Length: 260
Image 1 (cartoon, helix red, strand yellow):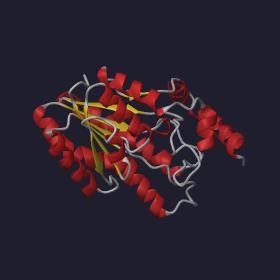
Image 2 (spheres, helix red, strand yellow; image 1 turned 90 degrees about the vertical axis):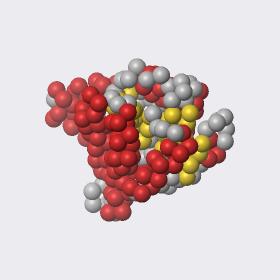
Image 3 (tube, one colour; image 1 turned 60 degrees about the horizontal axis):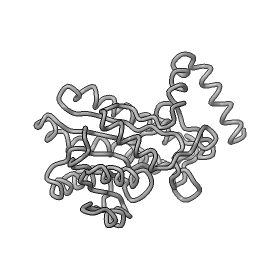
């Protein structure tokens, strides 16, 4: 899909990958709505013609409101990028139920809720583009966080389902699955990803702007997976060919980085 002149919505656009995506889409001539709990309006103010909206995608009502407000601003939505995510949680025993619920709502249900309100128009027009930020953890696993592993796997599955179910009716899908990206989630802080040191040890930590370029290129050729770390494809192949060996390798990595 040519991004020039298209109407695009990006969630989690107040910083990190979402901000970089919004900037790249804008640079390629798209009309962009940036949405986030905070920060989206500030970023939008630096992009001529862009719109920033305060949005909480952890609820169905928040997603419905975002879709409706974006249509008011843009006229129609050509591409929706469900990028907002949380890296909360630890082990099965240690993680509070509230953290599981938040991770499910933001990392999975937000994609479903957005699609629920986007699809009627897209199917009627026979055209639409759904994009999501999952993670290499959704293809492999995230050492240190049960909720992140489970929800990102579900995000990949949802993207696949969307592509299979609606692909013949004009809906295109792209799913971003990076390893380490230089964002607040990866580094120390209240929303730091448990096991972030494992991610850093597993491969290069990329800059959000570089990831955004690869995403935009993939959208313009209408590809499905975006794997900014090419080694992830090899890990996926190893996992499929010899899962026991792959699991053993993951346990070895866990011991070497996290101890125990």
